[in-house]
Length: 97
Image 1 (spheres, rainbow, N blue to C red):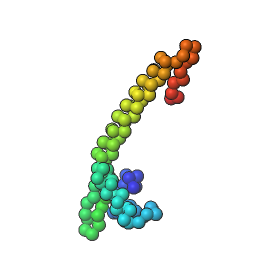
Image 2 (cartoon, helix red, strand yellow):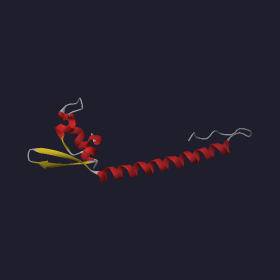
Image 3 (cartoon, one colour):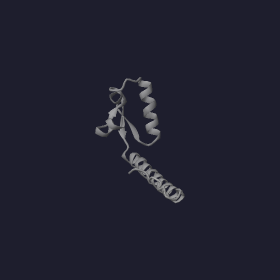
Image 4 (spheres, rainbow, N blue to C red):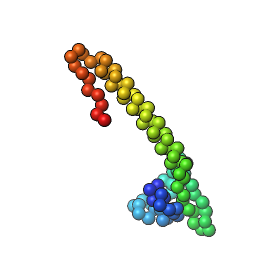
C-alpha cells in the first residue's frame, strides 16, 4: 500500500483494488499506517483520500539506520571478544561482510 501511495494519493477503494483482501482488512491496515504516522487521510466530497506522510517514513528510516548501526557495533564487539578468547593457534572467524 505504501508503495502505491508513493506514486499518487488514492482513495481507500482505489488503494485496495489490487489486493485480495476485504474492505474491512484494508481499513484496518490503513488505521495501523495512520497510527504509525506513515499516512494521513483527508475528505474530498464523498471520498476519503489517503496520502503518504514522507516525514513519517523519514522517522522510520532514521530509526532503522540507528538500530542497524547499533547492531553493527555489537557484532564488531563480539568479533573482538571471540578473537581475544580463541585458543592459542586458532583464529576466530569474523563475520562475513
